[in-house]
Image 1 (cartoon, rainbow, N blue to C red):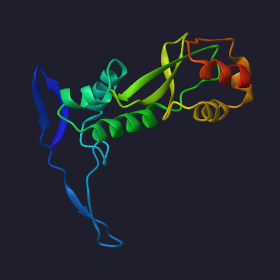
Image 2 (tube, rainbow, N blue to C red):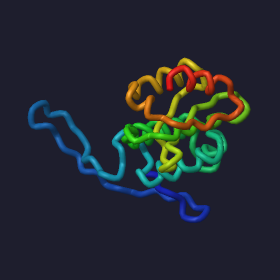
Image 3 (cartoon, rainbow, N blue to C red):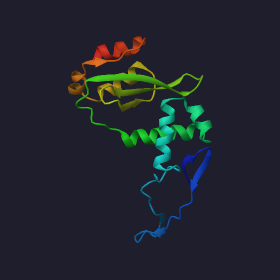
Length: 168
């Protein structure tokens, strides 16, 4: 059973018969791969995208509750989707935006979301809200890209301002 996006308030599961095969070399059994489902994930790509969009406007625990999932399942889906959409071409990045998303409401567990303000597209996720983690992530882009950044949106966080001033 593969979880898909809900139909109204009803949960939708797809029953798909995956064919079983045996390796000619080692005789080890394996299942047919489906292009709309990751072999390690239970939801469809469409469902994973649907859940990820909800997290951008809410917190992890609320999304988990709404979708009848555990918080660790939602976190796993977010990690899977971030690996799928990243890396994005950031060579023309001029304006960098940053926001924080609460993974678990009330527990102080946040991730940093980086956005290209011109294209309004997600360009990075930093797993923890620490200056060193953000600095290391941005440095991984390389000096050429960092030198091209002309503007960065800065909220009241001194940590973010310090990191941007230091490396851009």
